[in-house]
Image (cartoon, rainbow, N blue to C red; front, side, top):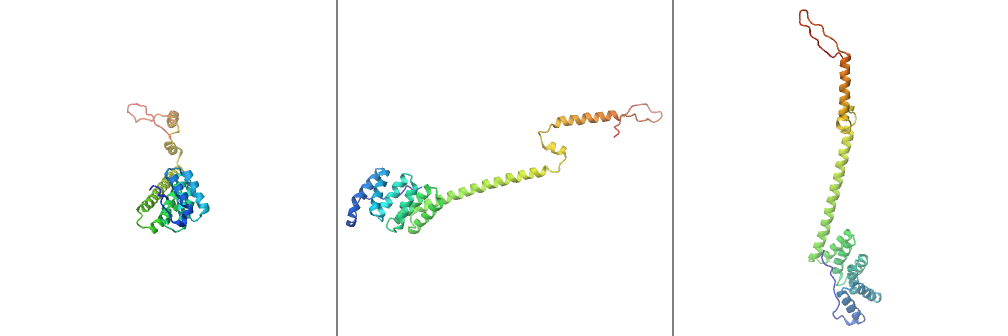
Length: 219
């Protein structure tokens, strides 16, 4: 993401703003020295006396942003953008950053778009907008893939359950390796041999033929 855009108010201002000139310079110096908490307090003090001072609300938004107080940053940048003054477009760009960092991707997209409408040449706003849109698309693709995997797993489980219905015990045993198949086969073989012994008989031979015993299974 583009580094937060902030303007420092260290230069001279109109005489009409003589009452806030020193305060703006002081607040800007605190911000430049990365004393964001003090800078935020200083900007808010200016806004208390001059609620429509866009430079103060803009600076307050920037300071709050670096303090990771994204809700306060959003409020300050929204107020600056509503003034529709010289800082409106920059405020919209920074508002998009604050929304994004605060986890509000949809609102970030709207803010970036508004910034681009005001200045179609703002390549950084276009870049940030593309990043957020691509991130959303990647997340959607991931969600779709996860859902597809879940559907396939569910379908396979249903098929296995369906295949198990109506099968003979022998067929189910063949599909279930947990069954003691070898033990059952041995028991069946013993039962067959017992039946064979119980039903043995000697088949009569033809006259003159050599006597021989045959064993047949009569069942």
